[in-house]
Length: 192
Image (cartoon, rainbow, N blue to C red):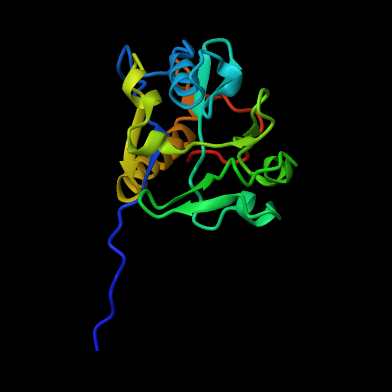
């Protein structure tokens, strides 16, 4: 008796910064939003894009797109079953013919990335441009990648290691070496 294993390799768009490189950060140019709206709505209108640039501060911009959840809250919240599984890409997409624009999915998304299109008043979320994301192709900094879940685990390990590295370097010695400077005032941990 053999069991078949689904070998479909799900992919998603992720932001992969490389701060050690001059062009390894999002510049906030919003080319991805324009490319997305052109690919999906046939217009240059960032309000109709399925990817959003979030400005966290002066010069700190992060592109955010659907995380393609395995068990999506947006689908659970849709009572007209307009969020359906695309078997080819192994992701959930919005069936605009079924969507009534109620917005339940918008409130249910833990990442705040599913939106209502301002023109059609229907839900929009990343559909990976049928396997060739326009945002990845257009990004001048090459910080958006279309990668598998296995590759995402490598990215997440690197991000986690960077967080740990920053925690280790939160306390640095002063030039005289006599005492330490607390760079993060809310930190409780001290280095020996």
